[in-house]
Length: 227
Image (cartoon, rainbow, N blue to C red; front, side):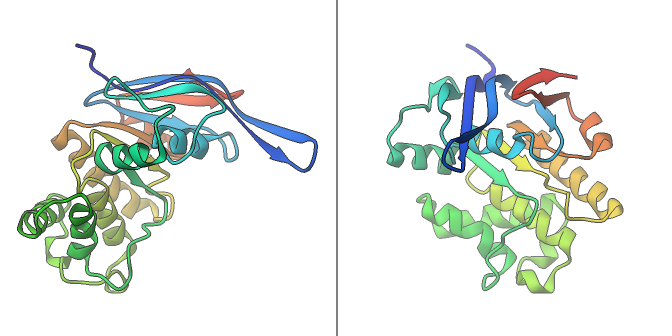
């Protein structure tokens, strides 16, 4: 049985710019990520990192090429089945936490579990466990406005892992934090990923953080290449 959790094969993606111009973002981009592996994706702004992550996370579709998660082909699935796969198999973290401001830290982690059919008591217990893992258990009853930026991003990590996904995708998850906080928050992310054994693809401009992952790849000319 293959250990490959995410397989991107021959991805092509272009966007129309104006009436006649098309901008090619991905051109025959391919990447395999194994279970338990953390891979850093580095590239300058506008090179297509977010596009690659959105396709890998089933938020966008390629013009050509295929996406497999856990050996299951995702390309060509109905919108409903893609939504289910995204909710159950993929956790996504953005540069800005996007927490729901009217809910507490714990509630932000409980809600996606309830949407996935998890019992309230089980969802509450998992939320408390995840918050404890990243050192913000004492913020469980706080709303985002009462937390620091680093605390909010830690809660966002927990929310991404609420439904025990097999794949974590993160788009500049520490890019909005100061260097000291960024390092602390990244340590929390690494502990979560290592502790759960999922596959992770993390886009970052921070080469020091990238070097601490298992492997670094970059986008060059629309293709994924090893560094």
